[in-house]
Image (cartoon, rainbow, N blue to C red):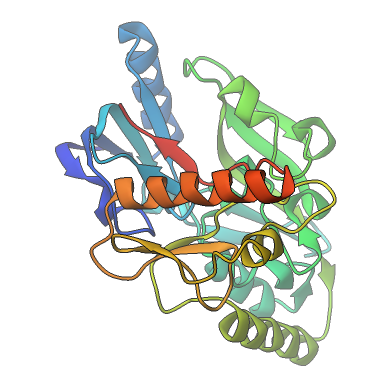
Length: 291
């Protein structure tokens, strides 16, 4: 276990912006995680469970609580079950790493997630998805630790209450520590071709060269956030170092030196303009944390 004080969270988040956290604890086992959660519960400290930081922005004013991050021992991936069609993954593992492992084992079903820049834990927490696939399609079961560290339980994919960018973890505060994915045997050449094609599409249509948090806004029912923002004339608009991407209006990017305040001010500008023009309220998909 590693305890760090007064940590720059821009070093741990994909936006490369934002303030400091009072404390960062990196845990290397379920027992350490339970110990830390019990301590946080006992002291009633504010806390945040952080994955790869690809969907989180800490305000410039900082976060006075504890950030808990799963360490490298939670990155393991292995084949599970007699038929070899399941993977058990630690929730610290990156989606890209799991996709490569699945490819090496000729397992299909995970290709959609190969370019999502988050960790398995973050992906399960928000039911991440891309190119027609979502976590709910492939999750068989999840091992959870209760928010006070006392209870370990395993729940099925159905019990996770997955819906658009939602899981039951957003209500219960439980922490996912490992996941079993149900995949299928496939042809490694076809799997590789699919992953390459999705990477090509992602690189062509998304501003991967700039720090961002992926799609910034949730998809409003009956609309596409990016199209609404573009139709409102906001493509390319900037506040400080933050910009609505010129490539994909659904992305806010850090063009260099953006503060969290720049990003949040641009978010509000986009929300207000889209609401004024179309009567649609855009909700951020990104978690905004801080004091």
